[in-house]
Each structure stands twice: as C-alpha cells, then as structure tokens.
Length: 247
Ligand code: SF4
Figure 1 (cartoon, rainbow, N blue to C red):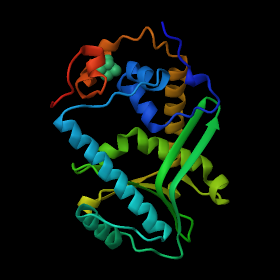
Figure 2: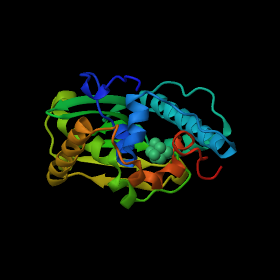
Figure 3: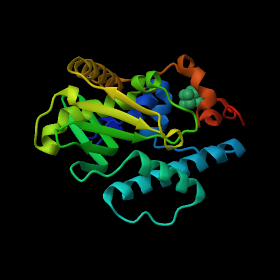
C-alpha cells in the first residue's frame, strides 16, 4: 500500500465546508481527495459545461471583489455585463459600511480546526454583520436548501467565534446574518438569521463530525453505503469504471 501523508495530523490543516461535505458524501472520496491528493478531471461534453460554469463563477467573484474594493472592474463579456448591472443595482456602496472581500478566517477550538473564506462581509455602522455569498448556479436556490448546507453552518459559526478578533468589538449571534445572492435572480436574496441556540448546535455538530473524521479508518470504509453519490462523483471511473451521470 502506498504511504500517504495523513493531513488530519498536520497542525496547519484546517477543515473547510468542502472537505466536511466531501466526507459526508463519501469517506472514500475524502480519502482520495485529501489523503491521497488525487484529482480527476471530468470528461465529456456535459462536463465541459461544468468547467465553463465554474470559470464564469470565478470571473464573477473576481468582479465582485473589485467592485467592493473600489477598483476598476476591467473588461467585461456580455454575460458579465448583465451580472454586473444586477450587482450595482442590488448593492449600492455605502461609505459608512465596512466591506471585507474574499476574507479568510482560520480558527482552532479544541478539536475544531476550521477555515472559511467569505466572498463578502459587510459591517454596518450599528455593528450588524452580514455575510454574503455569491451563487452562480443556474438553478434558483431556496432558503430551506441553504439553511441545511454545511457552508451556512461553518461560515456562521466561524465568524461568530471570531468577531472580536477581527473587528475589535463583541456582538450577539443574533446580529449576524448569512445571505446568498444569485445575480441571475436579482431580487431573490436569501437571508438566514443566526442565534445563540443555533451557535451551540453548530458547535456540537462540527465538533462531532471533525472528531469523527480525525479518528476515521479510511481504509476499512464500506463504500456501498455511499453508492447513491457515485453517479455524480468525478471518481466514478476509478471506483466503478462508469461515467458520471449525464454523459
Ligand atoms: S465513485 Fe462512489 S465510492 Fe468512489 S469516491 Fe465517488 S462516491 Fe465514493
């Protein structure tokens, strides 16, 4: 067996919403991606769209970063022009606010080692904190779906734990919101409120799952339990010699 670097034991390894999600979907996928550092490019025409969508999403994130940082946006293609108009209509820059763009936070609290990278954090003059995340999927997202996402839980938890370190003031969890915005659905802003109880529950959940990953035996995992995900997984060729769903 090839000896792999067990990143779980490294001090500089922090769990992210992506790695936790990967573990939930399939522990073997976590092993392949994070322990064996394997990447597998998707192939086929549908997958070309997948990569094109990712590229468009990255371009949009870059434009948002420039917009909130107050620097020129650069040359825009037709798709971006529409989205940028939508951005400018939805987010008027208010000089009284503080804007933190592409802001990364890392934290450690007992077993919980987490990192989160925020598209945008807005701090209002009355010390309310808004986390913003841009979603460029073509499908319209719903609040019920976003409430359940590991991303929501991780992003709110990490920020609530670090408000004083970052901003130099204390705030209640109730003063934090997580907001999702899809530029193609301009008026559909999804806002999720936070609370002390949600924070306690999130800590319990994250602590439990991180402890589970830390002690998990990845070489004895029963992957059949996770097979419903295989058809969407980039490792489907590797594990099952089958194409990804839709190809
Ligand atoms: S193809 Fe299936 S078993 Fe293999 S890593 Fe992906 S989800 Fe897990």
